[in-house]
View 1 (cartoon, rainbow, N blue to C red):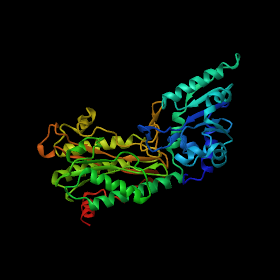
View 2: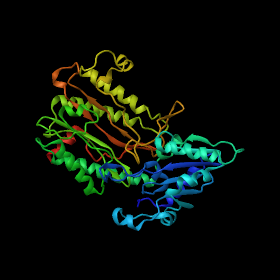
View 3: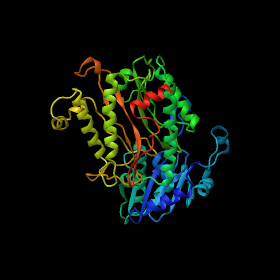
View 4: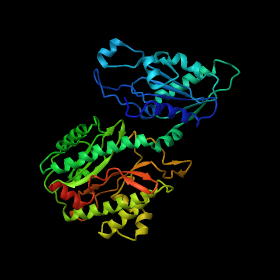
Length: 432
């Protein structure tokens, strides 16, 4: 069960129904169990959009939300025999009572009953393109519903992704508290691992330490596969092999966060495995740190969500120009995007139920503006591959610095600030 009071989800549904046109319905489906190999499955994790409106964490379920506010859940019948193998199931009555649905039906009857339930409606909303199989079911149900009465108007299929995404973008106080806890667990993990990291350890050693720290803190699962990249592996953005030895003099880039109450944290630190940055490592690190700070300062209520990207590109370009890795005027570097040789990803992403929260950055060509209680990661980086046309002393350096930033009335709050970001503070932590 969730740490959020279940009435919260019912009220969410009622409020969301107000954003729907009259005589309409929203259909969402849950996640399903996924086969890992032979007869074993991956750990089940509920679809975030489905969870956001239901709080229900069982597979093979469908929610219908009527514009009137009535909510209907299709789920599995209670099955005592299956419960002996797979654990507790709410069943129809349990789901209705515990999660405050107006009606519940057996999921096996979905194909039969849903066309009847949506017959005569004007609009059917869903998250088009998220799940092709479910999209096909929607079309089938609509076709059956439209054929039931010759003289009725056809149902219009409309994408609800932006509307629901905008709702998810602004976090409630309850959500923020869960995110604070997730960030706290992840931050403590980074601190404790940096204290105990030593030359000669493998990337896998560190990954194991992080996962153990997450569990010790109260999080069973990471919010994504951790990246533990020693030496030049840090120049590979999505490096997850995590199996090489980290040698004396190497830095290690660790991108690792966890889930708490299904809400994600996402932290990256790059630290010297021997506890001391070299001159070149520190030079690059300070450029990334400056860009990080400038990007955070761009998070202001009313400002475009793309402002941190612009600030990071400007700051990193100037820093790389100052140490001779980029050439020409700053305007030329920015106009021609020459910085992409070393900085080739976005500054960050929305954070919430997903580590890359399913929320828009623009709608109808207009940038989303920061509002209070939005959460965005800020994670500039510089990656100098062996193929770069630079002096050998810079090659193989990859540095990223990432924190989870909450937009507030007064500016921003760094939810992961307890993990040191300054190079001097990181060195001091590793010596403690």
